[in-house]
Length: 302
Image: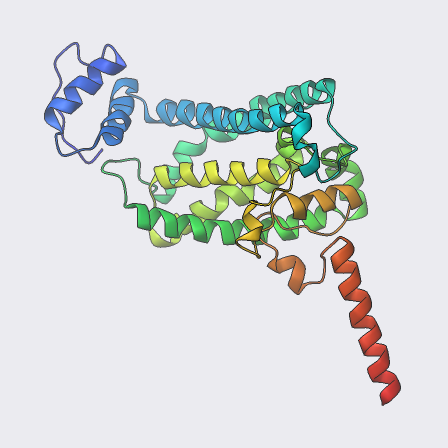
């Protein structure tokens, strides 16, 4: 840590004892920074402190963000916003999905999270206080979204190649009408491969620039989880983000992928599918027909 602290013999016996001591001797830090420093001071083991914080954050955000969609699925009023209105997940499907996701989190993601701090230290990721500015974090997170989206597009598209689809990706397509909890309902191999894009983007940035705080990475993962869960929600609202940002993918984009089992491979943005002509859905099919007819007319004219 960058801040120098002095502690009484009993200061580290409890987390709040550490917090009180830190508050006395680090008056320049804001409240969240004091909470952060107190956690690492209390734990006295950076690998353990980062591992516990990372796993708890992931589980809290994943299931916390999925809960509103579970509730919405139970309220008939929202059916008019459901993209595939005749396919509402049952309580059993929700439970089955949650159990497999939990199994994946503990068997696949937890070991990765435990190795996270050593990897961060190796590339120079900072865990110190004070925190970076909001503007710096926002810029870096925007870069991570672009990098991850490219990785996700190509890896996801590869997963739809015959052998990879049958042996790996087919599990994720068990639900042709996705719902929030199903965002990480996938083969352990797929979780590892696609998750690598989420983690490697900031790690690569840090390895090159030597300028990244672990808090920025946490915020990035939170935003990425929100994006993934919302994209699998199965609901299209008048206030959905893609109505404001036309290049944003969202549920309307990804739901078609689950319904048709092909196309719309990107995670956050639409530009890869647009440029490489892998968009799916009625509008995309209409554009292709119009383009083909225009080319045929042009060929006849020549």
